[in-house]
Image 1 (cartoon, one colour):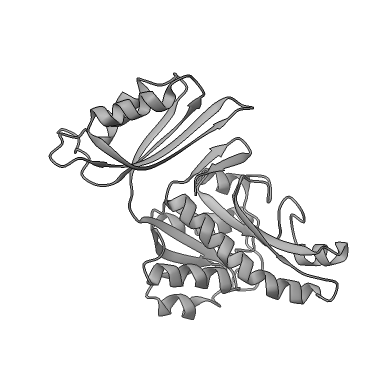
Image 2 (tube, rainbow, N blue to C red):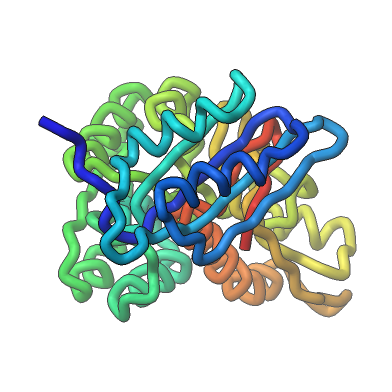
Length: 294
């Protein structure tokens, strides 16, 4: 059976070693297939000599357009051998959100999803506590309580709990897993199960104050700004490539508790922004860094 031709808005993503005439080659292939470029971005990391390109394309009326696989192959044939090319449809992708007890980041995502302002679909929420069930069920979404303690109150082995967590996530086949203040450290094996597909919000302006109690750390250092960082989760705690950050000003009168209260607004907005960027295919991973086309 022949692959289906492009019939809707598609996103074309390229990253490869820099070379002369890359944009001309890419646009030549797109034009040759009568694909209209509705918007595009490009960037060259001059230090690494690496090229990044993102375009949204639509087929011209009456055009005999290629399949996504054919377009990908044709683009790859015009680019350096190490090029990575993806062609993906602009559509709402499924995500699973993991949370613990705090509602602000989860609530922001639920509201954006409910009003159609999230370029994705929350298909389930998973939590190690039952606290947020009522909030989630108001939005008509599945809520999975996966406790990290047994009936006697003893902590489960991390591998056992993560197996249950993965089972709850995998039944919904999400594109991304979003940690909306999910306050548990994930093992290297669990992170490897979803490579580059877990995004976390950390309540500090990384790389400052990684790990536990960042507002207490910030207070003890007498900082004048506090922030939040959304990053891709890696095996090293709070060290993954950064997608989005923001800060607010504080002063000597702020206690750690008041800092945490003020920081919640930043956290929820930064996480929502990062999720939007990922779902819209605007983030390229580049070693420990990201290239983000906003």
